[in-house]
Every structure is written in structure tokens, then in C-alpha cells.
Image 1: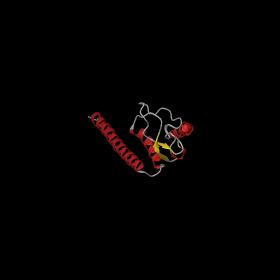
Image 2: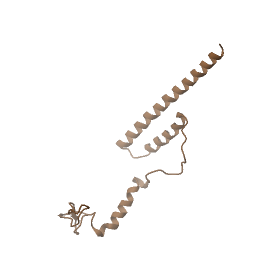
Image 3: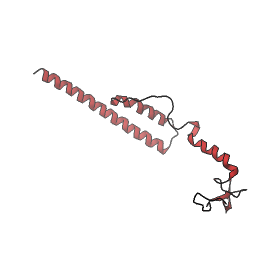
Image 4: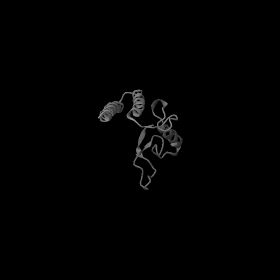
Length: 131
């Protein structure tokens, strides 16, 4: 599909002449050519699918997520990190992996601090009970 030197004969939503070039063998651009309507619909339907036929959006029946502790978050982060690592190498993937690794490290830090505070509280209660 190559464009010609002539402009599309259709008008845009504002009623102005379309600024696109007509497709070779037609008086219309790709977007206005009535003979290409079916191809446009088919190509538009492909927009909901990622590369390799993966469907975008939620998959499966995970059900509601309950997050009561930091430990509840770690399996979710690990699953998302695994999913990211299965994608093709790209700058976006690298950024996502780096970000999630940072979140996991922060979760470990918070978890460790929670354990230490809990241990200190127990020790303080035992100390006060022995007085």
C-alpha cells in the first residue's frame, strides 16, 4: 500500500478536506477508503492483543487479593517479576524489572523492621512483667 501524490477526497470530522495522501489506485487515504473498511476493522481488532498472541489485561480467575502483611505482597511481586522477565528484552522491561526489584528490597527492609519491632515489644513486655 503506497501513497500517491494526490490528496484524499474525503473530509474530516470538522468538515475540512482530509490532509492525508490517497492510497495508490484509490481516491481516498487508508482511513477513508470504503474498500478498506473490513481491513481497518480487522487491524483494529488486533489492537487488543500483544505480541505472540498474548491478550492484554487480567487473565485467569485470581479472585480477591488479601494483603495483611508485607509477606503477603512478596508472592505477588515475585509473580509480576516472573511475568516481566518472560517478555522480550526492552528498555521498558528493564525499567520494570529494576523498579520491582527496588520494591522487593524495600519490602524485605520493612519486613525485617517489623520483626525487630515485634521482638523489642515482646522483650519490653517481659521486662515490665518481671518488675
